[in-house]
Amino acid sequence: MTPVRLFFTLGCALAGLAVGLGAFGAHGLRNVLSAEDLATFEVGVRYQMYHALALVAVAWASTRWESSAIVVAGWMFVAGIVLFSGSLYLLVITGPRWLGAITPLGGVAFLIGWALLAWTAFRG
Image (cartoon, rainbow, N blue to C red):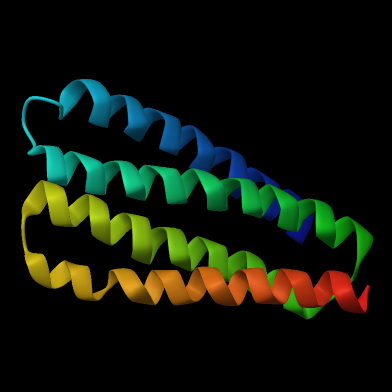
């Protein structure tokens, strides 16, 4: 599968999942979680959506500029969603606070993804 199709497909799937998780948080978890945990869950959803859209941008950018950096950027966004958003979801639903130690690794993956996307465009 080409990077265009791969990252566009992943972006759309992860954006749709973010919508579903957002609805689940707003309706299914509203009376189950504390206000603080619900806010944490919503941060995970928001960052998942931002970076799902970033994957769509990666797909578009890969049609403009051939670069291995753009492919790595896409995978960094995927890793960031799994590590950042995923750890927040698990943290509030299952409770182990040590999961919060994983969250910054996802943030670093997001930063690397944005830097590589910018680098690809700059070198264009």
